[in-house]
Amino acid sequence: MHTFIRRLFGASRDASEWSAVDEWATAKGHRFARSRDGSGFVVEPSLAAAGWRLEWGAPQRHFVTGPELRVRAEVAAAGDLQMLLMTLPLMTLLEQQMFEEFTEGTQTRMDHGTPEEMRWLVLYPKVPQAEMAALHDSFGALSSLPRAAQRWLEGPLSQQLEASSAWLTDGQPLVLVVQRGRLTLRCGQPRPEVAALQGALRLFDVARTAARRVGDEVAQGAISRERPSRWGAPRAMPGAEGSGR
Image (cartoon, rainbow, N blue to C red; front, side, top):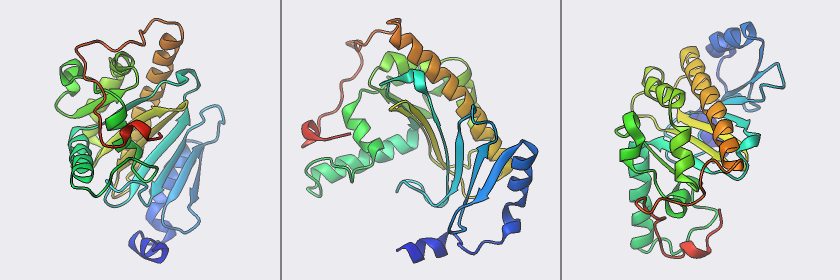
């Protein structure tokens, strides 16, 4: 399997293929490094305070076809706040797959083999599309605290998500998740164009700032931990009650 993946993503890629990315990273004062197997790369800021890590290479999720772009960083103030946003076609696909797995007898309970994005669809309520404003046709969101997710998506983050169509390859999934004090951006990115990396980092930076703000509001009690009665409850699935996250 590992040999197949190495062949699929070109373990022997020529170093010049990512020269534009290397040059951009160097000009910004970032560190550029090829992955150990040569099939992808990592970019990290020279300033430790920035704290993010960008990776491009083989996908870590089955719903990403082809190479995947990931950006991660700590979001300390968010505490135990858990929020997930994804492109609407991806949410629809995962809901369909989850339904088929549990209703056709191929799976009886969720376990660690179930992608966490699918587990979240069971565990947490959705933010109603009516509350998503301009994003309602393109994205879906859910959270342990839906009011917090709604606040997270307001203003600058909503604007950056709308602008993502300029750099996100058509039809590719995009996921933003806040959990365990960390923010992760994940998206399909067949070719690591510099413009796409810059766009992803802009979106990530705005999402991280907004997550810290919302985390502070939750910690201060400014956002209620109660779910509005008109918002949907988590969907029950066979065996979901005993599943772990």
